[in-house]
Image (cartoon, rainbow over all chains, first blue to last red; front, side):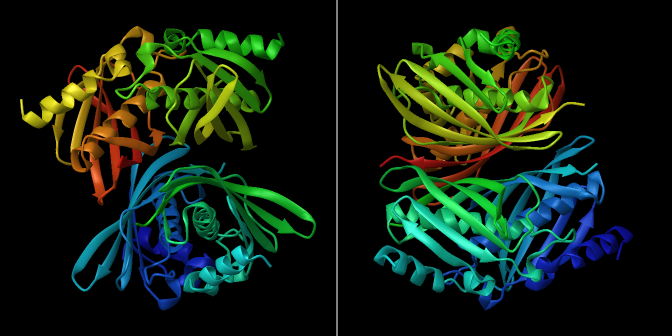
Length: 135
Length: 135
Length: 135
Length: 135
């Protein structure tokens, strides 16, 4: 495990909400972060799919990590947007966030969320947002 | 309690994720929906504020209800955006969603999220998104 | 005319694109800016409505002014989102932008765009975005 | 020139605003559309960069074409978001839009805008939005 990943994991562990849901930081390097979340029955909505709020949480968190990978640890999400592409089912969600551009204080990130069932991955949402360094 | 509110509450109760978090539908009428959520320690992030993912979940859900109030029960969130205004602390979150415009199949909604502590309310996020009726 | 409005008008006049389209700054005060634009035939799209790009331009510009009214002159739009509510026709567009929240360096703004025909005003789009002060 | 590109060009030519600015459809195939625009002095803002409104117009238009390439000719932009990455200068802008996912009536698209100066291309903005077929 890289030192960067270790630092990232320790930050994630300080987020009670992420621990409550069971989020894992799978990969963390300059310009990119990957979060994974095992789907539990309590994450669903009324049609049996993963609730959009779980997916938007993952995007928010993944882009904060991606932004932090270039701006430093002390960052927050300014804003983001999510487009849902298809209903998410499956055993596991993966959120892959990348930095699309960054300056000294602001990073623009995007994120793709995949639902994983066995060997099948399907992209179920895309997001885009802004991360800023706190001074 | 109005019949509309009763119907809304029964839909919310069918969302395992909303029940997991403890979300309540406080008000539900044509063009407007209000959700409330008591803040629990497991909803926080590493700085002691409510995690953005909790707030974005509330926006997603509140605009779906608002959209459904004019489009019918069978709706989904197509997309939304959130801007965080200030860190959310306090005992309770309130998400007030309104329909800004709607056609036969699509409603544009906005949402304001307030953190409530005693008698003090502070707006901590604003959102905007699109709801569509499933055919 | 207030001094604030005078300053705002002089900034708008330094924007060649705004002069090219004919945009006017109608009102400018702390936390709020109103732009107006007379609709010309060259602003339309293939169905005879005002092109969405004209409307999104107005939102971008109006929120920059609104943000600048609280952050200072030297600001830029970080990002914004627009939802179109109905096709825009009519003689004139009005974009009303307000500051929803602001800190030292960032302001969250929203904007409503109305199409005006005689005495009739119809809201045709809503936007939300982030303005930042350049250091 | 493919028949698809010919059809696309003829639609673009029916947009007075696109003709007013001088937009060209460079490439048009299922799932992807590329627009180009030669930068003219009247497209700038007060700091000498291309006005954000020109860039947001390009994103709006490019994603409508991309969405139309999979949904059919009769489409409109429901909403979109833009994040500006860096100031746009240069001789020419290119907007490359792709379909990220689509159903019968809705397509989710993203768009990258590049400023081109000689052989140098720099990405200056990214966008994401929703296109819908009109019934």
